[in-house]
Image (cartoon, rainbow, N blue to C red; front, side):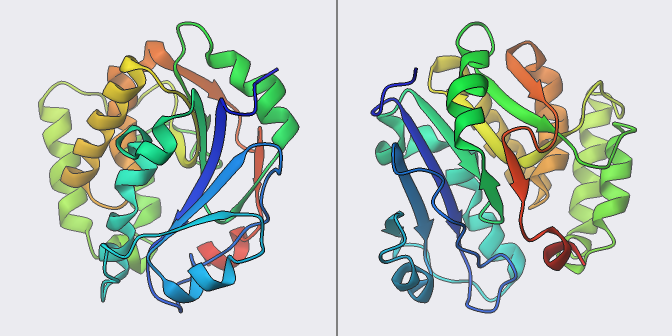
Amino acid sequence: MIAQDELVFYTYFFGDDHSVANKIPSVPTTEYDCYYFTNNLSTYNKLKNTGWNRVFMNDIPIKETFAGNTMDCKKIKSCPHKFQILNQYKYSCCFDSKLKIDLERVKINLINLINSEKTILFAKHAFIKSNNVWDEFNESMKQQRYFEQKEQYEKYINQQLSQGMKSVSDIHYTGGFTIRKHCEMTNKINEEWFKHINECGINDQISFFFVAQMYKDYIYTVEYYDGFYDIYHNDYWK
């Protein structure tokens, strides 16, 4: 059993009131600490009395573009050890604000999978089964928010391939649900991912495709919807 002070759940939203990502999921638990980080004052105010420990990031101004706001959330998503409020816990469960967490599955089963040599847990991608990075790229180009960074993605992917990385990997991961054991190796993976995100762009599933090849021995893989489910999928992806 995971002690009350060992596990934290957290999610985030950075952007304006009209963003499709501006969601407040039900708090996953009252047993463990749960934090919601945002730079949106309206969202922050709505979090009152929801059970979330709300954190207002007033040092991060709301940007005019979706890409700018999305990039602002990448540090807390990929590098929780950089935030003292999160780094004090032994384990963290980071999830997209459009997801609902299965608390019992996380605390009883999934956490125990990363107690040994596996320090970080990711879920397989929901529908890209070829495990080819170009399929992820092509799928993302159907959405305007990703299409705007098309050239940046192409440059990044081709650079990775020129350095010996593979375009096809054993597993392609989704980026919306991550469980971490806070340790030196996890921190190393976190920082490598954040560096790649800054080179690649806001589609962090593309960047993690290559980071995962570098650290595959430390990643535990679960199926999509193992520990969570998407409550806004149709509205968000159309």
